[in-house]
Image 1 (tube, rainbow, N blue to C red):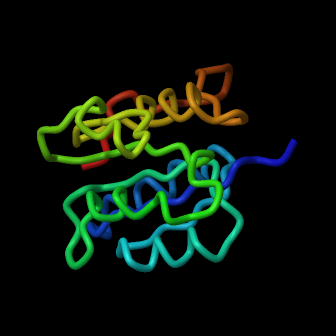
Image 2 (spheres, one colour):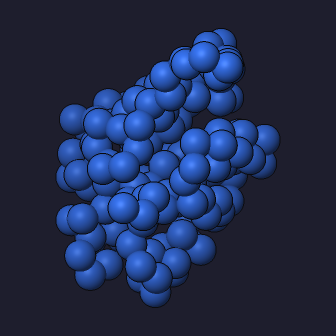
Length: 141
């Protein structure tokens, strides 16, 4: 089975890079973008990702606007969306866009992986084993 590819849409470069590095460290193909309009274009033109990790507070086209426009994409119902935000919102409030989870920043890497593991086949949360160190307190801002 091939590893799922994941799309990160986050304007904060430090957070985007940390998420991408953590997911790549767990063997996943990752595309990380800072801009919702660029993400919408990629989603319209490329093979759909297994999941989109989306910040809502983006400059220009907001993450909320991206959620509203996702339905324009063929097979949009197959896209699993995890919102990672500092805003006070719930998955129920974003149900119109089939958001599968809302995680409030800062997000522990293990929590992000656990949520992705619940909604995307082939993503597993890290488990400590002999010779493996998991940084329990590492958080994505």
